[in-house]
Length: 464
Image 1 (cartoon, one colour):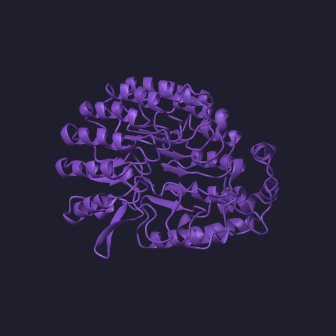
Image 2: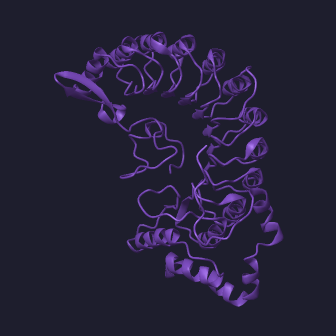
């Protein structure tokens, strides 16, 4: 596990996550400043956003005796410039702590307390990205206050903020009444099984949330089963990420319950089940359900233990399924036999699949060439990602030819041909179904379509 980023110099410690979760209930230490100067606080709260978010933030920090965060100040200045240019409609405020393009001082729970006070009246901001910061459970508490007050917020990214089960409970409960938020990212916050159960309970009540990302949250089997059960009736969720739960045993229970859900759910468009320890019997359970499902367009079963035998079930269901458009099989072990099964179906039967990732699947030349031949006859099949397999000369020539003839666009694959001494080789390029899912690029656009092709091909609701 990566080390936690250092706290900014001069920052006041918020204590452990459990202590932080209880802090709002005991009245935070900085609340006394507000109580001592009620008149001045009221004046700041009434300050018009037209005076500038940057100025409003500076004044409020001075009023509350809070250290000004230069990173927040810089971002708010950029927003003020956009507003002056008349570009104020539907702004997503990006204060992510992993921004590589500007100096970053990570946002703490105290910083977010001030920020939430400013944003609650900013009707032109409908998205907020504070991922990769240090909000902890105190920040989660103020996020709930923001969700109660800011009725235009449709996208909220809280990923990797050290939010624990208590903070997860606060956010899940505030969504019982919220009817605005469409997309919530909680990726990497260790809300565990307890927090996951609160989110599953929330989905029984909330009818407006469309995308929920709970990947890498240490969910347990109990909460995975709860999500599968709730989604048989929830008609609002279009995309859900349940990547890397903490599972015990070899029974593949998660695929059994998710398979049952897919048979009854006809609204889910994207399903992410990375690192579920899925084996061939598990992919069989999912494929059996896909015969009856007519809504799922994006299936992510990357980083599992699926072999070529599992591809028999997937290739067979693709002969009749006309809905699936994107399949991520990265980091499994389908080998040549599995690639050949898929190639045969894509060549002679399926005409709906658009993108396939078989990155690092121990496929050698024969299987890779077979997949390239599928692209020549199947015009719907437009994106393929193959890096991490075993390239021979025939593979390099085949994909080089596809790119040169224009059948495979350079942005739609993760390899690029080059020639040395008259021989063709393939180099890796930074394209993929979700290359920028956990990180941002060092230059250019962070959410470029070529690096996030899965989300571009299957857009669901509000995009970041």
